[in-house]
Image (cartoon, rainbow, N blue to C red; front, side):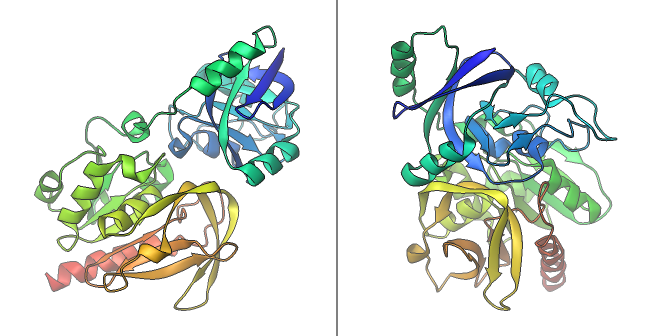
Length: 359
């Protein structure tokens, strides 16, 4: 089945459709991941986006029950060079095509993903749409240009009601901005007793649970679209240890007077080198974000930059100078990707223990 990928600048790519058959529009982004397509597609940080995979073949090992990062993915579409029709892996339970059909997510194959990625790198991410060739292109472009991308993405993907993930150790409140299951997995491995809360939970409700620590998770979109979370962080920091990841990192920075900005094409992939300033240690990291913290706006009396991205120098980690709180832009939980940064979860455990002893 022929389908078209159209971009708001007038570019048209022709390919073969697979997965869902819907006509969709969203922000077209690219990821340099060589593996982990199931985790990528089910990562809620891709809410509303059409994902371009730069790796040429996608789908060759199928989809399995262990690698979900969310049960109900909300990305808009998938773009690949070659879609593997057959899947071979001992964990395989269904093909990528079957999975996308069940989730109603359209895919398009046969696209020159190198040309598409070069365009996105040169002009930045842009709106795109997957449409049928039978549709009138002029009308499709008009609709695409008129499409307003949503700003309530976190509200779309966050849990509506609190729920527990029982453990026997430290009590951790997890604020869900669009969390990846791998974050819960890493905390559970450390026997934490978890309570997952909606993104708009107020500070007092969190403190009433007497947590040993608070985790601010990843999530989609512009951090400035979640002002209630920024205010909540202001009220809980200094009263409980905080660890922020990805969107949680950006919100933590905003709560402490820093600013954020939209990147030209973002960081999405598993191969981003990050340097820890204090030690010079280089970690290869999993990343997925289109916004970053503006280094020039960081108040050095309150915040200390702890990590930077080797390639472009963007801020990848900050720590509060007065409170037990830190955050990183990348994903120490990986899934997919290298586990170089997983030690940060242990640092969070140590921070909670030290705070408890001091209290």
